Image (cartoon, rainbow, N blue to C red):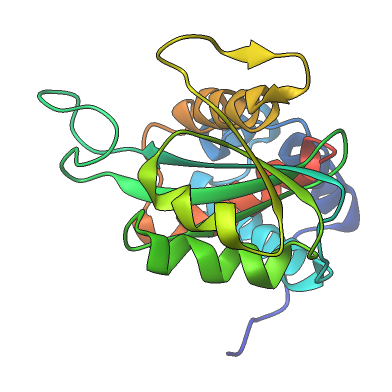
Length: 198
């Protein structure tokens, strides 16, 4: 895909990058810098693509938390799994370091298990909630620990609070954009993970 060279001055590009890193929206950035909002939007999208293209591939090991979450969609009716119009996302978090996210078509075992096997080294401890899609982890190459959220949220090291905190922060961050197009959602989420220092 051909990307034409930006006509913005180096100083202005630097200011836009500064606003991007600060988490400003295109609208806010346009108001502050005086650059057309569509120009800012395109510039920000190019930055997201560049960042996503430079992300290294890595495997997680040690203590890894796994969970799925749902973004967007209508507020009325059902919440979480099965809610209309939501984007399902699966996440793996190596405690205190990195997070890996993937948009998924559903939260079934046949969708989640291959991702875990590809991204997590065997013999790692994988923490999950008691969702049935994780049952096969009990007889896998991983040490599977589950927490039943209907009774408690943490039992010493047995919890998935890290990945759940990531979901909460990501939803709070993405909310300020007043809706992210589905086509761009993955880029927004990957860039957020990078800036969260995970």
